[in-house]
Structure formats: C-alpha cells, structure tokens
Length: 197
Image 1 (cartoon, rainbow, N blue to C red):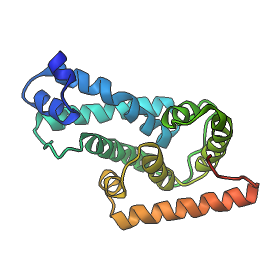
Image 2 (image 1 turned 60 degrees about the horizontal axis):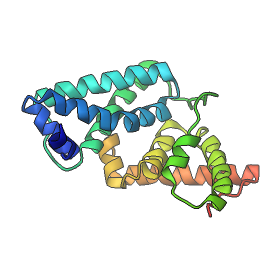
Image 3 (image 1 turned 135 degrees about the vertical axis):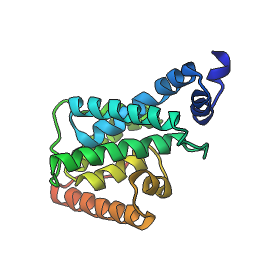
C-alpha cells in the first residue's frame, strides 16, 4: 500500500486499468471530497448530488475498464469533465434553465476557510466577504456559478475549465466575464465591499 500512496492519481488510474482494485480504492478516497463538493456546489441538493456522484464514479469505472483513459497528467480534470456531463444530463432531464435556488444547509464557509491560508487578523473580515460573495454566487446562473467555482475554488485554468465543461476557452472566459459583471452589479446594488485583505 505504501507504493500506491506514492503514486499520482494518473498512475493509480493506470494501475487500476491493469487490474489493481486497491489502486482504485485509493484514487476514490483521494478525489471523492473535492468531486462531491463540486457536484454539490452546482446542483444544490444533497440527494441529487449523491446520485450524480455515484453515477459519475460508475462512468469512471466503466471508462477505465474500457481503457478510455490515457495518462495526460490531468486525471482530476478528466474526472470533473465526467461529473460535468452527468450534471448537464441531469439538468436536461429536469428541463430547467432557471437559476437553482440556494438551500439553508448549503454552507461553503468551511470550504472557503480551508482554501485560504491567511493570518488570524484577516480571517474575520475575509470570512464575511466570502459569505457575501457566496450569497451573490448563489444568484448567478448555473453555468456562471460553475465557472467561478472551478476557477477560484478549484484553481483550474480556463483551458481546464473549457475541457471539463465541453466548451471553448472563449466561452469559459465569456461566462467568467458575465459572472464578474453580475457579481459587481449585485455588490453595488447591495452596498457590499468585495476586497480580501
């Protein structure tokens, strides 16, 4: 198992393809939290997120067993791409083009705190700013909310976002541009100062 722990996600995926089930177990444990957080952020419903998460990993297993994964050094982007496709299929089934409403139990403040490494004095101010941003992000259309989440919370490049969502880089940039314009407009309308220290 120590040898597996030293392997990258890409190497674990290839090891699973070659028949090592323990490699997949470790790969799942490494990626499940980040993937579930992404899914939950987009769909806003725990039951739906659980279903999408499970369907995503079923598809991952099938694709790996069919040898449809090649080591490009971007396993996490490949994984997010599959999840994105499952989410889009779910949205199509719902025939819903409207903004998804936030729920009370959907709190990303713990995620925000974990992602930011800053000194104690700034945490209170930054936590409040992030709560304000999260509230405004919840009002964005799903495609804009998704690109903001991938860019700022998962630190993906626009190229990776484009690959994961199946659109061009220009479309990803356009969605980000509109998301920022909408966030700025909402901040002005509500008198919110959006600056982290």
